[in-house]
Image 1 (cartoon, rainbow, N blue to C red):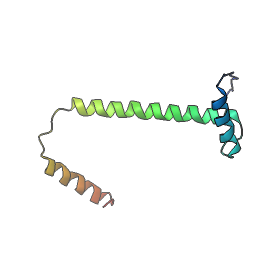
Image 2 (cartoon, rainbow, N blue to C red):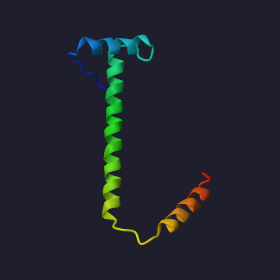
Image 3 (cartoon, one colour):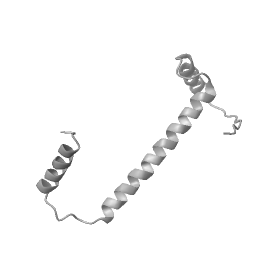
Image 4 (tube, helix red, strand yellow):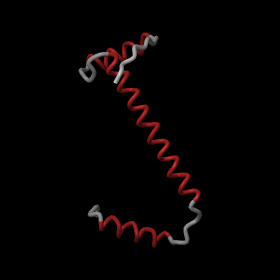
Length: 85
């Protein structure tokens, strides 16, 4: 993967925070810290898109004709089959 050089400007308080993260031993340098932040942001945005998709799917599926006790029984049965209860 090709690496690109970026120059950023941050306030002193943020610089102190970044240096503290590096001094903690979790990161080797500023670049590692910023790359980790970007990866986390990418993961979070992907999870948000997936959640929104599931919400839309649920909203578009209509109202269930099953009762709450019926739904709970199905969920419990599935959890027992999966060995989770």
